[in-house]
Amino acid sequence: MSQQLMALAEKASLKAEVPYFEIGDTVDVHCRILEGEKERVQIFTGVVIGRNGSGTREMFVVRRIVQGQGVERKFPVHSPRIAKIEVKRAGIVRRAKLYYLRDRIGKATRLRERRIDPKQREAEAAKQSQK
Image (cartoon, rainbow, N blue to C red; front, side, top):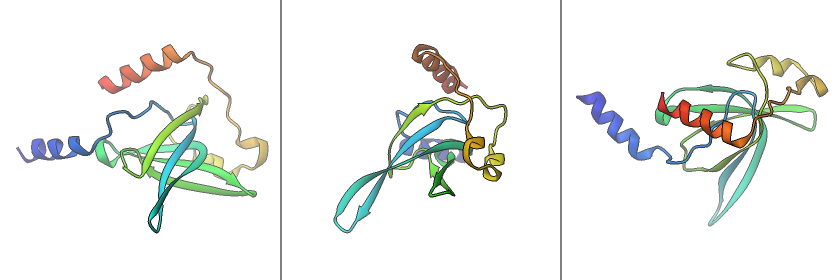
């Protein structure tokens, strides 16, 4: 009974529209940032190197290179501070976690691009959400 109550409580805080993205995809994460009274949106662009959790606890890690230094940030998928997630490019990978990219620099960090049409991507997203 308590698990059902927890599921109901979590369901209220889940986002309705979360885009389908996988490990290896290059994404733009639009973060809401509060500076005093003002709110602005800052974009963090990078490669998704890991995902974990489920439900409201689902997180993903995005890595990018800034001035030759690797920067990683972990985001909750269903956070209200995330304005939106845009998938820029789909990458071909054969692993669940891309931690090996931490040891690489320059062109060695590039991933091959997976070319699929948007209709096929939507079908994959629908199939994944049914699980």
